[in-house]
Image (cartoon, rainbow, N blue to C red; front, top):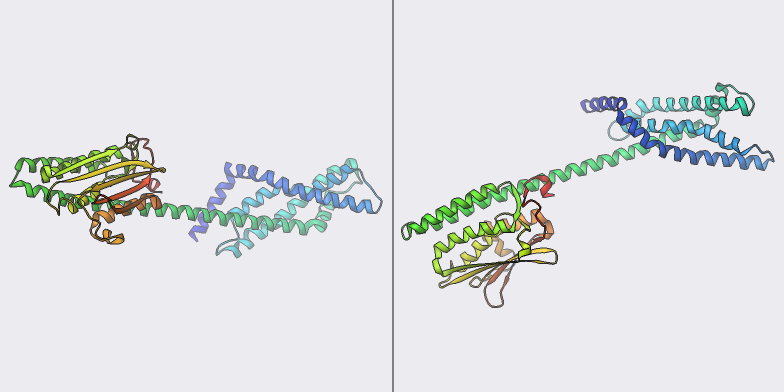
Length: 393
């Protein structure tokens, strides 16, 4: 009931405002066009009938009377359409709307059309035909054309009902799209919150191993970690940053790992210049590099090199992380059951880019393994995008 009352009050307000005038003027040309077609058909029918009986009137009479018969309704049609939009014969209250206001509106429609036709016809007959009173002309119009006029009113009501349903569907789809965007944004926030404790725990472990053996190295690790945490806090509300910024973050992280493994670990970054201003999700490379180190130098003796390549291929930004000591032990989904980092990375790509975001693993021909992430190559305008529903859509 409250919703119906709100709709009624809103309808009253709109009828008194300039929006109704604009809507009236918007519908009026369509109304005039439709009723002109009816008038032309009727004028032609009357002319053919008179011709069959051998009686002719000047052509202007056929045109004038046909337009007098229907142009009053042409002026009333936008008002009837507005009324039908305010009180559509749809939903649970369609039967009530048929009684009020449309039963009353139908009678007003018929009476107003008759009066307008009677007055216009009366003025016309003063100079061109036998004199007739407005009442006679109105009664004659109701008797001959009243049923067609009523049918016209209900056609308008039905058309407005369909327009109302279409608008409801559009609004429902819009609300659903906003809801899905908010859900996607919330899921991305959850994934970002998973990255930070996971990364923090692993980095603190690296620092702890150096505290007794190499205190200066442990201090450097903690300083780098504080800088990483500052950057990650700055990027907490961002869905995307430039690849150049992401590589700065990665350099801090690999600096920590080089402190841990010393000369045994080397990291090489080879990014094409055109890729540096393209957008990527923040912290998207760190889990892949961490995975390469853990399953490479973390499990095997000797030196190791982690290489990062970035290039544009077929409208997509492709970034590969190579490691000569890693092995693709579990093909397919088995890899993503190992831990948070890989599942998180793939989920973020899918949430942000849909089918355009991929994470795959493959074995290298010369030995080792490579992780490939692919996403749309989108240029940065301001360097970052915020984590808003609009950014997720």
